[in-house]
Image 1 (tube, rainbow, N blue to C red):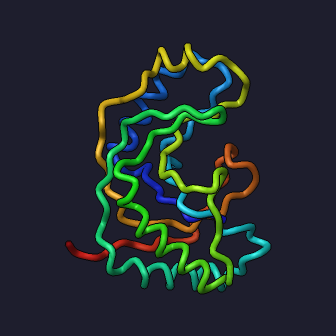
Image 2 (image 1 turned 90 degrees about the vertical axis):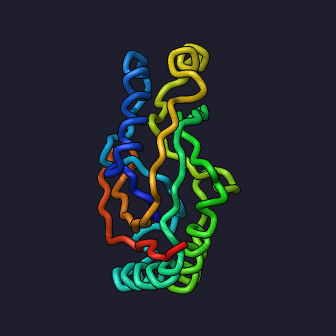
Image 3 (image 1 turned 45 degrees about the horizontal axis):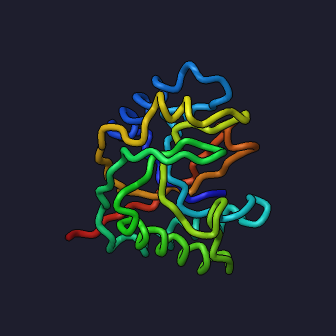
Length: 186
């Protein structure tokens, strides 16, 4: 179970992902993120064995309460980062989402007694994955085709979704439980 910022409904996210994925289409061994599931992973909650249905609903209510005072956050996509397991677009500014993540983490801790964790490294790096690597291959041809930066696109983070993922991530058997919306005013 994950807290994701689902951005597949935002034209800026879809457009920049589509542009990148078109440039990568000729490379074998890459699994493209479907437009519907473009996302920014915010927090790993745990397995559904560890969190009851009632706790899921409680987390959504609590997160909604915590996020009510936070305004929607405009962020920019465009800078490409390469990782052995994925090609990602950095979210800038990163600081803009730290308050959102802190609220989600606090809601998770309050309801489950656990604060969740970051996927992969110990430090959270907000990003949107455009392709996952499924084979070992040289990076330079991919970097040559895609570059280090795409035309910047702005999106607005206005909600965080609690999502149950069945099986491996790349099967995309995802089931959103609900959304906690950012409402605050600047």
